[in-house]
Length: 408
Image (cartoon, rainbow, N blue to C red):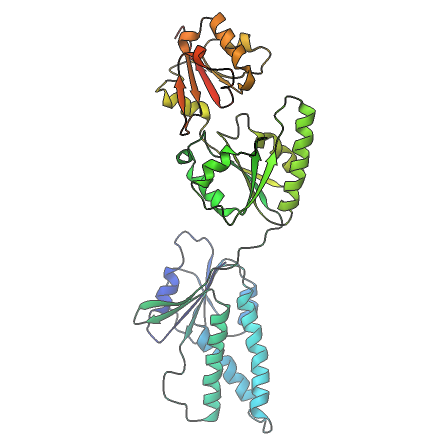
């Protein structure tokens, strides 16, 4: 919702400016013209109104142009003057009281319009001083009316000889949401330059971040995003997720964290959680978001570059060609050996402490000449290894192993 007030003299280009502010792609546009004002050829359907403008405004939806509200209000005030012309005592006070009631009703209908609104009015007070008391009262009232229009408008534009000068510019307050949105931000494998533009935009817009941490209270995801976005004004909530295969322990922790996130979302605040790689592949967010969604909150996910794709590119390796297939395997899979014997390219993830076992199976299956290991892919300490026997037992946490098909 944006309310714009355009002010100017006769022939200053007010109507042309108002029409130029409406995008050609805007579907619903209403153009109100007073019967006093000459209707110019424009590209919008015209609604004429010389009576009860507040009711007309309240009945419409979509972008609205009012051209020109000045003669409409001048006519209204003149009619009120005429109806009170017989009033001898306290004439000015009575006129002011009656006019204020009508002015406030019109201003309220304009201020309460929930879609984009462009109001055109004319300048007053730049000419000769009116000779009669009534005319001076009219001039003063029209000036006050323009002031009220300027107060309730986000943008005020002054037109002079077809040239627009913006004399006020404020942003409308964002609409208050009943519930916030829980965003999952895939930040890629480790290099902030691999984050998508969509993820960066979302990160800039939210005010609260859920940051997964390890026991050492470090967060790789936080390190990645801190190089792209100013986090000084954002609320950062560290959350510990236990690294265990005990499903009950994990689920209980997910429910507890999800409940806390739900309390924040209930206030209308959006929350984002950055996750390494892509959220759809072995991510904590994928498990956690299920419990947040159960509470009735909206989940939105920003895709990212998976670590195995970045690893393949680092090796200049063709993951798949022609009719080949590919398997993504967890190193914790009880059937790991059988999975490694399948045809096609194999991607082994979630290695952790299982690296000695993986090395043993690769040697048993004679796959050692088809192995490509990426450690900390995308990060400053990235290592690319083709001899898996050179890896120590504690190098499996951020390792991705690619195994090409020997028969290919």
